[in-house]
Image 1 (cartoon, rainbow, N blue to C red):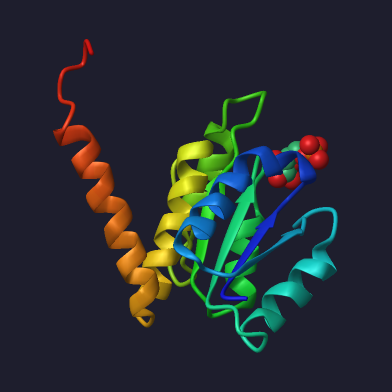
Image 2 (cartoon, rainbow, N blue to C red):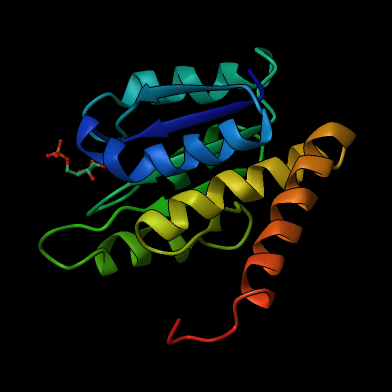
Length: 160
Ligand code: RP5
């Protein structure tokens, strides 16, 4: 497995599955697991501390509300951690975003957009990171982007 996709709750899966779908598109192997900063703190430490030795290169961590999972994961590993703010019901994910993005200097989390777009882009960004050392993955990312561009250029009329 090259990428670890973790999330605070099973209820995050409808969002986080977009990260998995993106990695599927680029042929990047990944694992998925529910790991909660608050409900399973010891599992979080164990997961993050063992990830590098298990061959994981990037961790994607999605959480909603008081979303401490990405920051605490980053505290336990030197691997790059991408944080996805899951869209909460109470505050539409602004709570999740602010919990994830405002990391104190010295421990980094790369924060994506709230919700499905952020989850999909976390998979895309993870693939680009893996792609710096894997030409096949980078070629798949470049093909995806070229096709995306061509789709727009070949049908620019918004009314059609
Ligand atoms: C967070 O609390 C999870 O990441 C989830 O987004 C949120 C709500 O969790 P559930 O109450 O649905 O399990 O830890």
